[in-house]
Length: 189
Length: 189
Image 1 (cartoon, chains in turn green, yellow):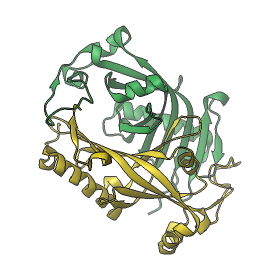
Image 2 (tube, one colour):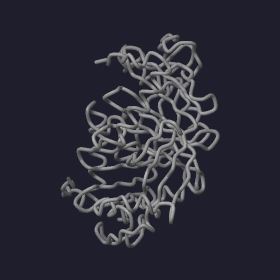
Image 3 (tube, chains in turn purple, cyan):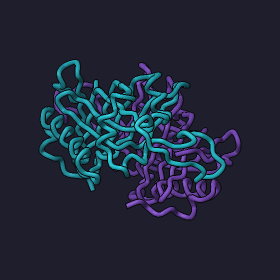
Image 4 (cartoon, helix red, strand yellow):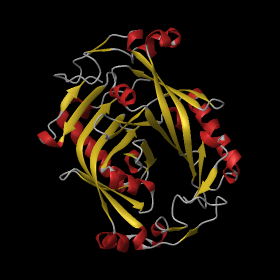
């Protein structure tokens, strides 16, 4: 049952390149594994938190990713206090785990109006609830949707480090860092 | 494309029960979504970290989970410093997201000998590398496996809170806590 080693996993350059190809596919294709990463953050008590998000943009040149969220979601408070996150994907097609350590900027208000303008009516339904996201309610459906641009936040994730693990006949693991221009370093799995 | 609401998502009791059923299935079935959760921790710099793990045990009565790891893995150092973790699963069959916030105890040495004794030769290959897991190496395959019971660590995760999100025609989200005997509280998605 051990997967074969992909050719692109055999050099640091091609492994790094493949990670970005997979991320780009996640933005373009709803069914790609990178479409739904897990975003890990740290809350005010120093507890790690994690949830599924939708990958909305991936820019390999700037090494930046984008995720949208309701601005009342806990994750927005968390990254405003501790502006760091890890984006995690297990890509079971490529046999590839991506661990992307990023600094985070929260965009709200006028900065997200161009994003709001491009969202479909259907997509807008995710941003804006009454009472606000996370409020205690008496019943599971005791809330209303109130879509509004004011409720949209964009998380801009600037990658600082990438850790890539390829599961093959023998595993290969590499670390890449912004500090050295993403040249990469093999490490023991 | 909106999934139907499952009947078990309509009350707090049955939703909580279903979460544990899914976790049990993850332990028993290699193909179940709960087999491979994401484990989020916090490193020494306060940065959130995340990686895929294999769920090895789920005890609903004690609300405890178990995960095995190489004791030289970064996550062991991380939870020894900050003994908290979140276990995250997106179950795309049940349309269920589980966010399980836990305190963590690391078991090593004599405490894990019974676990080691039950592992197959194949499974033991995951524990023990030379140079140690995470060491810089010259080539992707410049490491050897040296399986040994000394290299096995068991993470015992005692759940403190569970947050369960069901994506249905309308989403339902609930928080459960050890403090109130897991009775549960609906919250706005």
